Length: 267
Image 1 (cartoon, rainbow, N blue to C red):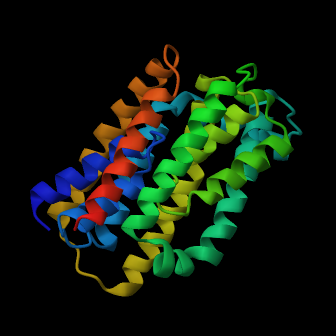
Image 2: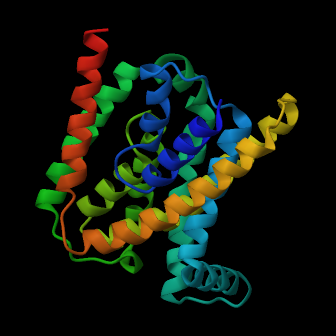
């Protein structure tokens, strides 16, 4: 890996982690199309650290409020809307943890291919378009009960399939349940904190036990680039969806998916 490759991969991770266009698809594509080598565990950990820092700093007020309310609900019996939301986010995280542990090897062996990426990119793009077009857009994230949280959590678990998009799946599910676009995005972003933290911790443990050599220059490049790009991505995405629908992201997914299919068919 060169510094240019490290920069571009971290930029892609930061820009696509929170958009409904699949970060995994964009990270696998360079190796499939350009023959770039796998970035390795250390770099995966670095970009997870960068994107986690971005979402936590951007939503720092909400994170502090939710954590305070969560512990107050345990020790003081707090029943505020913040406490309820914190518990719903925790509940929504459970399905992805279970699916991730049970399905990781199957996904790595059978589903991590360019054809799967292309197909899921198109299918889940069309699903996002249909749901967004018919969404009632009446609820905010504080109205999520346990059934809604679990439904969105199951959608997040589906995103273990490459090309699905974690944010795309969770936003689609939230829109289907009647969330506004802004609320769907906020709930999706807040849900990403525990799942990225767990995924990064799991990868970090693998890195420690693997004995893989660490290139600290690439590591720092990955952290800083993914942090900056993810932070600005979150900011502008939340600003944009207040004015537009999900259609531009659907169009992008269709172009990406069918373009990849064409490339694979003629190569």
